[in-house]
Length: 491
Picture 1: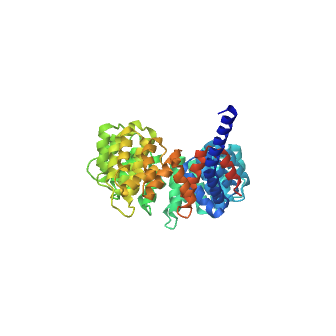
Picture 2: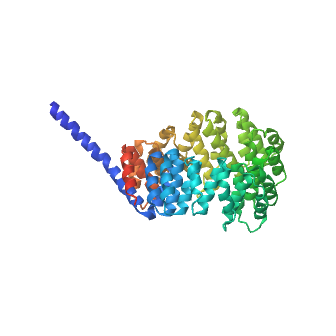
Picture 3: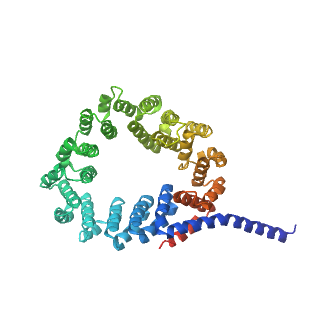
């Protein structure tokens, strides 16, 4: 073959390959462009994209935050701030200045405060806003910066607001800044049976966030007379946050209450204290859920064999609130230090194994199995992956389906070898989960299955189809240009 002919042959092969790979990308672009340009379908796309936590999608959220309908702008602003961090500040600033809705302006300002993307000078200027919510956010932000003189007049004016939420938040901030005359007004609000629970909870969270020590007595009285368990929990946490003896306060509240949910929520707060060991030891006697988890907390920090025993003992009775507590703790420890969290593997495996394999409808145990399998994948140790592989190669049942569903959200490439065989499964739920798992991780083996999903939009949910489209675009290597085009399609 001549050199010229060889060159032409290679060019033809490359063109053919390009034609073969461009079709799925074109199909994906057409589908996603259709979703994003249609306000009624756009929300489903945003929900799907949010689950990926993929920063490459940030321009799409920016476009929706600037051009979408008000509910979509609000959602996009939050996602954009969480996903982009400091990179979202310029857009948030632009929305604060130009958005036509005060609600969106307030959302942008609140996000800027969290990201430390707004100056004291700007906050002071915002105290002149016609919108009470914006003035309240700005004034509270100034208080946090220690600029009481600038914030005080605005907060004082806001205490006269006809909106109880705004007035109460302003009073609490003034109390935290040293204006003790506000305590009586707040006490009246907290004691009023007509005060909505969300306002009570918001004020307790404000005490925690702003460390408002003068509000300790208010939190104590609400803790004793709260209208509901959630409010009582927040009041106890608020009291602990500003009390010099927080561990003792929490222990006393736990011992005086017989509601398991309440006691475990406070146990979680107690366990986070650096000086709560003695109180945990007091609670560790016995075999009720609190005792089981107190023993688990005492062993958890050191890890190892003792922590494995305590973890297994904690989940053995199968109490829902205990399992939720345990899984939350495991998630934190695995994220912080996978190597130290190896002791969780036997308990997580048992939690999956204990689910009903013959269930025809999903039960709460299966949702816990999904979470446990996700954590094993996140842990990613040899032992953890062996556990997952054993379930995925086992018989088709509800337990296997739970584990496969969990892998669809894994970010660990080590799960790819165990998911590839499921692409050929005769069971559609397993093959779909395999496609999503491998697609998320950029494994080319998923392409045919993802194309099949995209080609049958009436057979799959909008969210699932949106994910299939995005994964195909990512695998094409064309995502930056594709995202720009998709963002430009949003009007």
